[in-house]
Length: 584
Image (cartoon, rainbow, N blue to C red; front, side, top):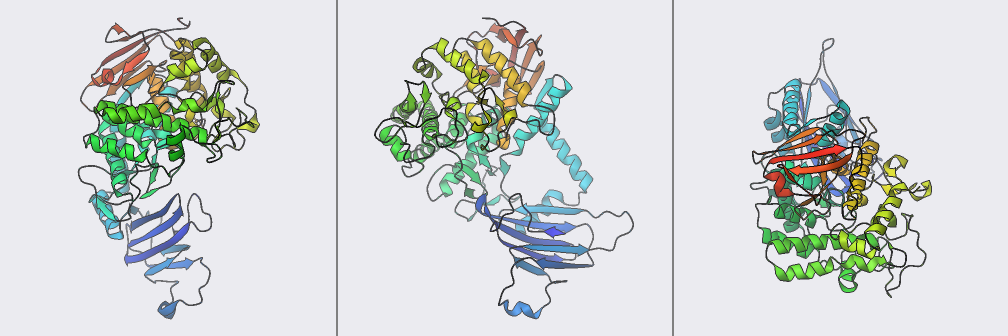
């Protein structure tokens, strides 16, 4: 049966139109257009059976139409070569011998049925299912062997499952001839790059794209080029917010594509025009009518009366503005740097010193009176509460520590976050989160606090970063079908696992710096695309030995718990000496 009705979200109105055409005795083409996640998503397909069918039929589940025109003269239910409607199914009958198998090849295209046929022929040719399976396994093994680790079987299962998850998305969005549908709904051709879609940027700017900048820099270069294509084709001239199938889903807060662009350029992984990319970042961050940006620019924060996620928007814009400032500094654009480094301090306008938390602020400058630091609803935050978002200043932890009363008070507040009890009522209605995704009040199953455990390094208590990272790795990642403590969000949760298992994490992408944690594997060799290798060795690490006694880069001690991107890409060896007692 060819079911053109099925989908993950099969609610009324999602299927806009479907079409199927019998090309010959074993080949069918068609398309389905849906309205939902990507409001104008059209997927064309070509389907080929390994032997001809003897007959076929179709059924429409649409409401009957008063007038069906000329086609009423035909019986469309059996052996009729075309079918169109919103809710359709087809069946195919074959003459088969006992235990005979029929192989079905399916290819898709964002552009046309003809391209889907071409994809089918050029991608599969005369290859059998088993041959294609072997080819896919070889391709995956090549990618997974970019990092070779030593550890327990459970660690290997978790680690390579995480690598598999990180490489699934973003997805290639073009045909074998380079054609794809653009944001203007016209057909474009990717010249000298692979075009990608499925950019869940609110999630993935944090760790997934920084991970690509280490392990798959060429692929990440293509992703930035895809974002620039999105910007150039888009009528609003903006970089993507949540790019998907020639649409922007406008999901979540921030304009985090600027972080991905800045991080790639600063780390030397973009071969396009960097100044044109900076222009795109600035233009995106200057769209006054988008999600409170105008008020953010004028007042330094978004008034709570104007926006339900006013605080998280302000905090995330401030980080993104810092990323733009770093890119401008990198390119010698002083005026742009000064403008955006000033904007990056806007987070201070939502910090209420009287209670020590980020808090919604009204247009008259006063803080919202009816406020609950634990609630995730109606408090100005998206997929998080004030307890988690109050630590979201990855671009300037030192200033945040000062505003929270100094290192000792800041560390105590982090302690409270990880040890408090969060009552069920405060996350019962939060999407993707259950008790398993929470440690104390720290919500790992959603992304805003993914950097928080590393902030102990700035508070002068790095041993607490080390113990908390290992606790999170153990509690939130298990080698079981339900082993993730939240939605993987196109690879962000998995990228956090990989980088943290290796012993470092990018607290603020847009910088060369990685914050050092506690490696959870015995040894790892990173086979870099530049031909060099970077080895990580954790001597004496184990479930009890989570504390770093000393860390050496090419035999020289690192004392500031900071690793540089260039340190990795230059090749060499990072050695951790581990123990069971915190080294204070």
